[in-house]
Length: 295
Length: 331
Image 1: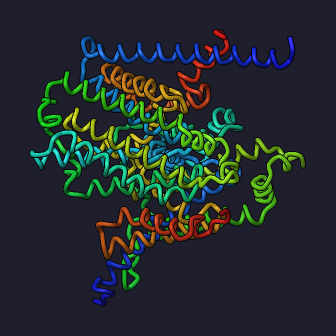
Image 2: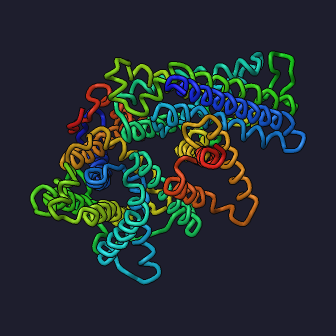
Image 3: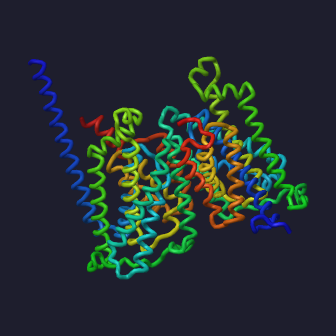
């Protein structure tokens, strides 16, 4: 078997694949954070909880109502998106004019609540979800084995990322959104319903997180705590990439997943820390992040 | 009456008002101090010490959030580094007196704070919060994998030892008065710092950073110093906590604790000296009461709800609201 730097090719490519998949999740989550940040100028601390809710909803919908994966793929994000809009309407809107630190703390409180409630109902050990039969098995690519579901995750994540990028950069709605990012008062002056746009944006960002959650349900263990760890990693990814651009968030997410996968192959002890270390290095060299615009 | 005489009159009454307010505050402080001195006769000393340790932690945190306007989401890392250092030293070197162990813990936390600050003050606002959170998570993984922390098990049975080599701290009363002394000294230090010219510059940075820069202050240096001081005091709180409970564990390093100290400070009143103390008392008490009752499993959800309520309905916290009330009705 061929070896690269003392590591069998199959092992290396397997870890790379896992890295790309993790990266796809980072990309989806940091994309949602970036979309919300653009218009609301807040970091959504409840993002991890929304990701978790997406995954939990998938499992719960299946267990109680027998809703299958394909339906959940649409229903769960929509449900979570509605919850997000409710949070924006009833809570975030009330502290609109305040320091952004408060909205961060508010979403943190919301995350604690959601996680606490679900932990009480479903325990910490988590739920099981078996993937649809279509995805069982995989194909042999010669140098590695590619499970179908993992391929599906990558393709779907990339499609959604690209779709979001297209919508924001190339459509009329996206133009409103970008205008709102620049100067929301002026946009309101042009007769656009900015408060509605804000609600929709928050709902959409949260939907992206929930969608990532649905994708994650069959491959990761679904627990009420699954969101909080990945959120901290995604924060580091966001700091590395900078909040400058949508494309930047996607690229950085996947890149960091790959870096993590490579570290797992060559120096496993550091794999959980490597993204944070990259963050430190980036901050020391280029404080505004790889794709950041502001000083 | 001429205008200048009128002016002087107003100034006089204002001065008198300030003086009487100052006296009221002094009386309040003395009453609180007396209460703290006699408290262990009525309440369980270990519980009181827990409150004091967390109050010190919150006071340290407030130096950043309340007086400098920096939201650190990684303060658990400092508490934990103090706790682990002290725990490790006191467990493995029986020749060390307790205060040496505590000092070493504080020193390590201060150094770690310097490291955090150098990286984190490069960004402002919410980025600052995210960076400190990520750095604290990095430390969490370090603590999980290190040998000296005992990994998942933590350090148990840390000996309390002898203070200065001859005061037996295994006696809860001795321990209590030692913790109280350290707490009061730190509290007075913070009071001194925030009312000093240095503290005024910190407040200026909080209110308007670009303005402070344009006035010629090296803002980053001030932030750095405030951060280092805050992390050192947080480490001191962690070291004390380890000695009191004879325990240091991963809970001390978890992001959950970083969130809790924010809640303590916020609910008591950011930017007030007494606020974090009141907030810590409230939160520690609440957690204890809840854990006794049928709602024991709901602590997290309830804390989250209080977080949301505080942010939406009363951002100035308990002390802040009391101050507002006094100003409205008593002047």
